[in-house]
Structures are given as C-alpha cells and as structure tokens.
Image (cartoon, rainbow, N blue to C red; front, side):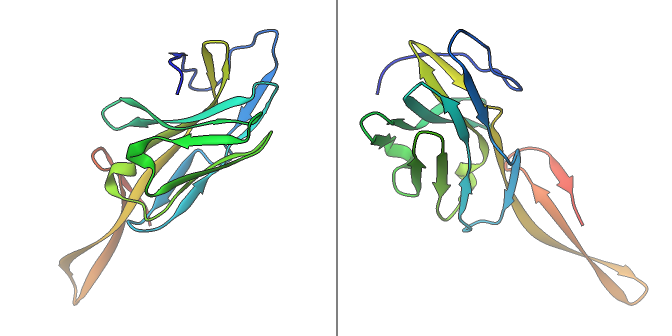
Amino acid sequence: IPQVAVNMFPCFLSRTSVHTSQSNPVSVQILKLGESTAIECYIESLMNKRMWYKLNTDRRLQLVAFFDTTYNRSEISDKFRQRFSVQFDNINSHLSIFRVAAEDVGTYFCGALFLNDIRFGPGTSLTLKEKIIEKYKSGDGYRRISRALNIPGQTVLTN
C-alpha cells in the first residue's frame, strides 16, 4: 500500500484540473451491536486508485481498504480484514461491515488518489444504538427511554 499525503476536506473536495466528484448518500448510520451495514460512496473520477479511511473516536486516521479499478485489485488492512469487505467498480465504492462492534464507531471516508494527494468525500459517521430501560415511579408505570450512544462520546436522546 503506497505512502501518501492525506488532505481532509470535511464538506467539500478541492478542485484541480482533474474533475473528481464524490458523495456519501447517508451522513450518519446508527446501528445495534452485531448488525451489519454497507456504507455507500460514489466517485466520478478518472482516478483509478481508491481507498477507505476510518477516523476513530481518538481522532486517529486508519487505512481500511485500498483498491485499484484498473487492475481490479483490492486490499483490506489486517485490522479490518475479518469483518470488512469492499465492493467497487469505476463509480461505486461500498464498504460493508459485518457484525458491527464497539471499535467500529467512527467516521468513514472514501477517497480517490491523484499523484500523492487523496481527495475525500464528506464521510459517514457510524454510531451504536443501545436501548436502555430506566425505571422510575410515575404513577403506577415504568417509562422506557431509547438512546443513541456514541461509544465513547456524547449521548443523543431519541424517541
């Protein structure tokens, strides 16, 4: 896997003479432990080297997968190889995660390599959802509260 300079643009891609357009249709996915998911990315570009990176909750960037559309070859990093797979062609680059675990929480970015510069899309955040039952006396009943939890991170209340 080649060494490259990484430039992240959270909401847009820088433009050069080579046109690259990327999109992640869903910006946040909330899943339960053990569920499986696919994170979609569409790249319209002449750049044939593509990759997926994960920004974990400690703000560390990890290479998940690297692939080359010219040679129809892909490589998944050792840490992700057991439960991750990538499906790609000239436009689609979909990352599948099987049996989601707590360590999968983070933001996933698809990118395209141009010389030594990676152009990233906006990314998709993966969060875990855990149902919590809080018991308290309210008349003669109990109240159930469902919360979406970032592990570790902030708690977001949902219905």
